[in-house]
Image: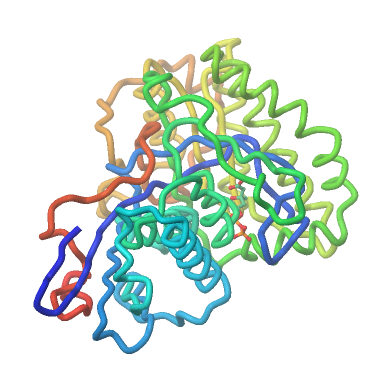
Length: 402
Ligand code: DP6
């Protein structure tokens, strides 16, 4: 925390991760509190590759609450932002009235300036709202001296954001209460539990923006009986199996459940009326590629999962990464003059056997995949200690670089 005593400016910067669900959240039972119809489970991705950074400043001199996202001022009156701000301020007030002596109460009556950036292109279509709201809530809590279970607050910004409050393997327990107090995230295992697990984000070229998850899932809840069946009868057992697979580091069980759950989520999208299509031709080719690769080895070595867009997220083990990346490069040859195809953790090139290429037997598709981000499981939100990394200047306005 940086405090400028002259101008009474308090400033904190934090970063938070993206998470990718292996048991999907799709459908709410309460739109305002963001309460889901089923529990879900995700892997928190490493912040070295994908993160949101947020600076919150608070000062007596600020006239109003303001927010800048990726360099542009946005509307602070947006209901979900307001829910998060209101909840953190309420918790801070409660701590003060409960007599928690060390609480910095200065910020409570002051307005805040919020500035947030992603280290990955928003255009890549990766779920940035999860990292964004997790980071907002975490940073606000640090500025206002709030501690305790904060996933119930970030959940009210975006459902999936509650899972970004922890590192490693995280479940969002759906809860039963009407007030949502028991609908929260819990760490199943830390990121250090399964160091061999690796993640490849295949960023697929998409012509247009798909239907957003908020409105998509609303239509699914209204029209899909398959979604009701999934939430009531499929997910409860799958959650148990998935938690068991994670505890035991059983990749085959983890991978098969991940693929089946992604497929069922997209089946509920097709069962929605009118139907919603998130997978495109490239996504379907990736699905085929993964199944053919696994069939060749008679072993489930690689798994895919897709969210509300065409990008594929691949889970595999370290020992398969080099070959599978080479397979992707072979069947989706990159543009030669384009940007770097492989970003993130380094992956050494390798040669593919003719036998493997033939077993997969697909026609290569040029430029289907823009680039790959190679990453792994990582930790939850953290405070950025270096004051030079604040995104707001001492005047409380975004620095040039933010
Ligand atoms: C397909 O969390 O973006 O990524 O709660 O309306 O903000 P809101 O939706 P959001 O939905 C994410 C849906 C998903 C699956 C998942 O992450 O579990």
